Image (tube, rainbow, N blue to C red; front, top):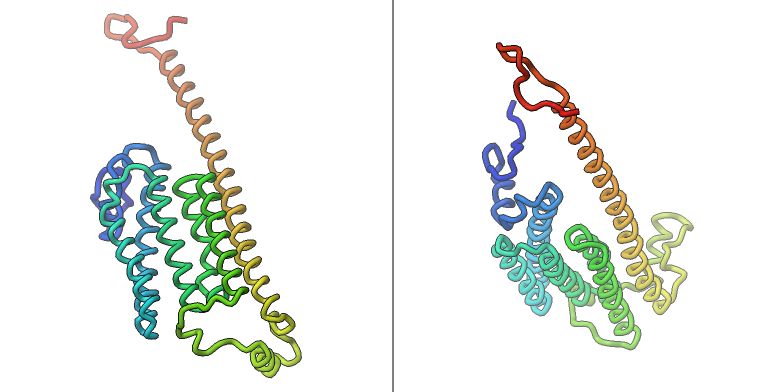
Length: 271
């Protein structure tokens, strides 16, 4: 049975995916402690996942003959892959965090803009953006990206409210009619209406806006609490390790041995 490699500077015993991830990491991340090493790997994995999703959204827009959406998502995909290829030259995780935040935000808002506006399904993934920045860059940067994304949601709400024409998309060709949707839900589930059945389109837009911003804030708040508790636990463990190391150092000084001439050999305590 093979054991997991313990030397972070060695690729021996690692799988192909792990080797590729490590090849995209800056050398400084291998010698900066376990936390920096973990965050460096996380940054590369975020870049890989984001690039894959951008390629997926691009192919989806091509399939539904939506050239503007395909072009915008294609630009994000190419940018994500380019960053991934040159990531091993960036030794500042905050820079990586902001680059990933930019690409993720553009990808999600472009997907929503070309596929339903404030009703776009891609807005459900917005909480991922500030959480990714939190894990890589820190709490302050994460809340900055929360504010930027909340502003984007507000802009889409106002654009929809004031009649801004969204680019034609596969969803726009088959718009949602609230009465028909409510009738379908009642026929399937009896008398229980869907949540949107009692809302006018204006109220439904407000609900979608508050739901997107509130969900993003709640997710980031919980993630921030978890990160704070984790950092506190790691500090406590490090302090205990230092205390144990100091204790064992003192114990080694108190232990001594005798040589053949019955004289003390090695280091011993002077107390």
